[in-house]
Length: 115
Length: 112
Image (cartoon, rainbow over all chains, first blue to last red; front, side, top):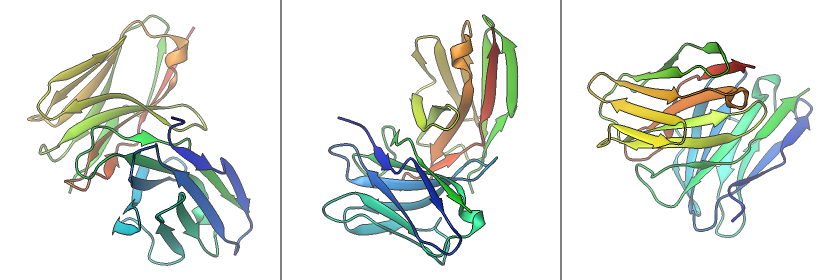
């Protein structure tokens, strides 16, 4: 079990481009959470997904950000028309069930730099 | 609204010293509390998870305690080593959905 896999590890985008971040949960985990870590800030929750469902997107910016977790394949966090303020580390975590988890497993993150 | 605070933001100690990292939370009705370690440019590594019914958890040189009534958790590191240098984060789930609320972390530096 390779753990939670995120790719790419580093991503550079010019302002206005699209960024796609991928997260493959641990084997047997069907719940995925995305977090963002801005420079000098703590991790902030963005969105919680199960297969083919968005359960809670209360932490997602209203515009330009979207997430999906299809029946097959990784979860995708998509940022359209990126701006400098989107530069951050994006982490995903997975768990085997809903509710207070027995512990999260995090990926190594994707560090997005917008130039 | 649950808020998680970690003090101090940074800590520097000489090798071999025992140390305590602090985590406080405003809503005592937590399900559990998890301590993580984050190395520069890396992801999060889970260190210890304390359920709400537990008072402490131990793993090697690490011991985490939980006092819900006072809204505090501590991470005790015994006989610190330079390899312990990292940022330590605490987090607790937001209600039943489980998404975590994080503190901003304590950046620990252990000097040889």
